Length: 113
Image 1: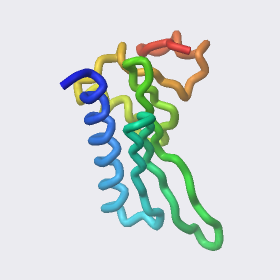
Image 2: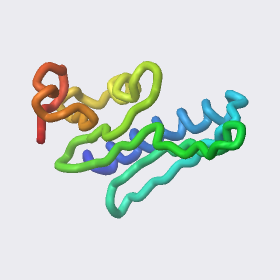
Image 3: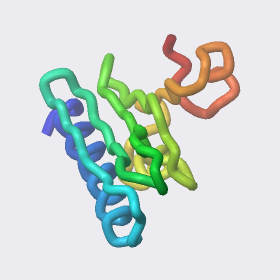
């Protein structure tokens, strides 16, 4: 399996696990997965109602670009990067894109702008 296919598989597995956890949690928000393999965009969305207010947000957004996994949004407790590392994705293959480029230099991950 080439690197791109491997990254797609891992990203989809990680997002599916979070989706299943949310579905089992009894939360009032519903989670939905959106996988776009053509553009390599992968999302976990939360939606529902809290009293009379509509709730709709991106919990996790990852994309594949330049042979790296770019984490664009991550509202998980421990960080989705932990799951990627446990799935044997190297630190050099992960970009914390939710941090500004000048801050990324202080992380253990790729600095790419």
